[in-house]
Length: 301
Image 1 (spheres, rainbow, N blue to C red):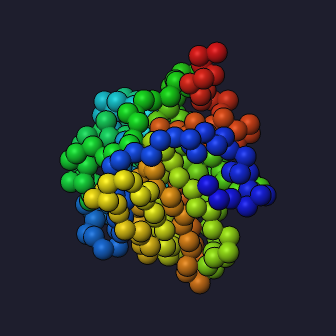
Image 2 (cartoon, helix red, strand yellow; image 1 turned 30 degrees about the vertical axis):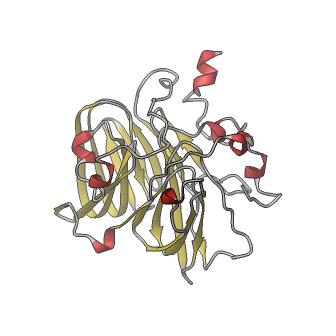
Image 3 (cartoon, one colour; image 1 turned 90 degrees about the horizontal axis):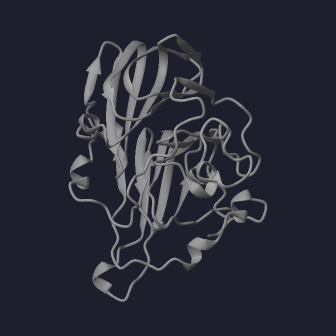
């Protein structure tokens, strides 16, 4: 992994460096919603879906009021209000502005009002939603090198609706804003102005989980490189995939990757992981709501 010395990610455990390189790899997924008709369209709301091995992203553009309901939901899911011009009501809980809402299993109704972008994050245990993904056919067969999904321990005090402010001050370097629940980790990074400095890229890899990078504004190039193995038939060409908001990119393990903002205006990318990342969770103070959601090791101890 290559991070600046001042980047806190340079202090992450380096156990991945000794992991054996697999012989087979899955490809990346790039779903650009602007190129597709919405899967669901109603009064003032349009919705698209994309998926990874363990998760589904529902992306909605709203101007008015929309209701999102789940019946017999098998696990926790996340609703992200991506704009300060939105408000939401879930049961007796209300939230306004950029907010991460964690909704418990079972029956629920989320009503969102305003103008802006709403994201819903569900695991693929919600098969009705997974089937709506634009790239669902790609996952007809399981993708390589991804650990079987296991939810994290139940939250302290049991399941309930929880809200987290996405406008709070992020970490300093990198400027991450990390929250987790039993099924997801969200890194709600702030928007950036202008292109990324090409002399300050951060190529890195993950051994056994996908990274979901959601571009909410601007343009990015996702640079992805797979390892070479003894069997040349399994080699893959490098990718330098340009995507325009709104888009979902799923980056497979153990590819080396980094994302480069290239628009002259505002560029905004957030990252999602399912289940939560153990390495980020092990870093003291990184996960802002860690007290609500214990890590597996914390429960075991």
